Length: 143
Picture (cartoon, rainbow, N blue to C red):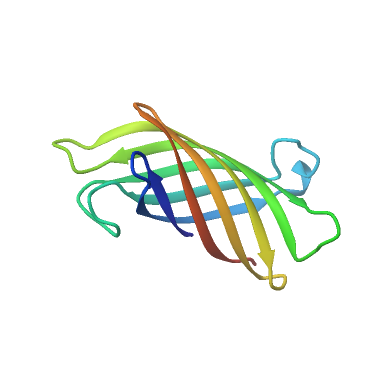
């Protein structure tokens, strides 16, 4: 997924790139927390540039996603996604590893059984950094 952080103060847009893999498990279908287990990698720009600078963060996380249909449509569905992992902050004298927690809410526009566009808002928390929001849009190929 490609997206942008809106960094406070000033709401400066910053690059955010995410790639992930997940699998839906049938036995979790009725679980209220989630039916899909995920792993994702995210790079976020934290420096003075939009695309890339020496200041960034690299996050590896595991998560659980709950997919659910919306009434009266099969073309659009929605999901929640809870993630935990480790974020590595770069650009300082030393790399800094911190605990990461992300909570996402999103919508999926299905073109067919295999192709879709995801629209996602994530509330991110890295220890020592205040909560911040990322907005992302991405393409998904399902097998």
